[in-house]
Image 1 (cartoon, one colour):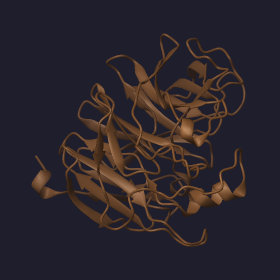
Image 2: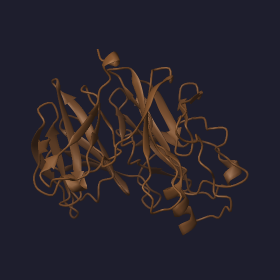
Image 3: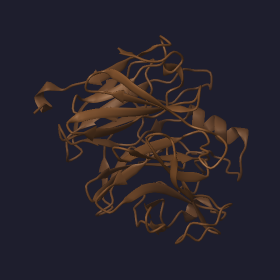
Length: 333
């Protein structure tokens, strides 16, 4: 348990982690009072709160994902912008990422826009000062014509966006239906490579060779069912399909234990049913080591730390943060 200011843990977002001089720190977004909470993970101690403002030159709307660029600079993604802020909440740089604001060089805003991923977060690499984000086409695309890129590198200092050439699951473009709102892609940077997967498929890919690996579940099907009656635009049938469907979350890598982790959610018959989640562990060659049923009452935003694979509990106390940690002794150093 970590002691927190009151009414913080009930509104935690996906955390970001950084290591500074051997000490690991977590940072969370607190929607209740629009602030960031900094925690010393090594000591299990709350460090400070960074107040954000919704107006003026330092405005930040609700934070959807974030990452550390340095120990004193945080990059946040909030609906229309990528914004660099310092540890006091002062804006250092702001870049637009959607088609309504056209001040980002290198992107044909009439065709593409960028989108953050709440399950993946922002994947930053200091080696080339870039992040990876999902890139979406604004053109009408029939399900049998999915082509091109779903990911792009964003070079912050150059204000440049470069779409990446990636592969797709064989059944990604189905002629007998559409996946509605389930077109998302999860991704994780592993050195110079990007490990990625799609919400509807158990297949996992590497960007270097676009090779698909079968990381299949023993408990569920391994490909979601499409919507049979395809229709464009937003409607409740597409939303209901997403809520009820089998869904695969991003693969992440643990460099300390050379393991991959992936969560997925089982299919439900009704939108009122509680889905069951499963957690798969595989080795560095995507050979499955084991699969377990994931316990309830934990956020599905994993954190890979030196300690292991960690998850944050749903709020049980207004002033405490509970972490669930998975450790596999045969794979410990």
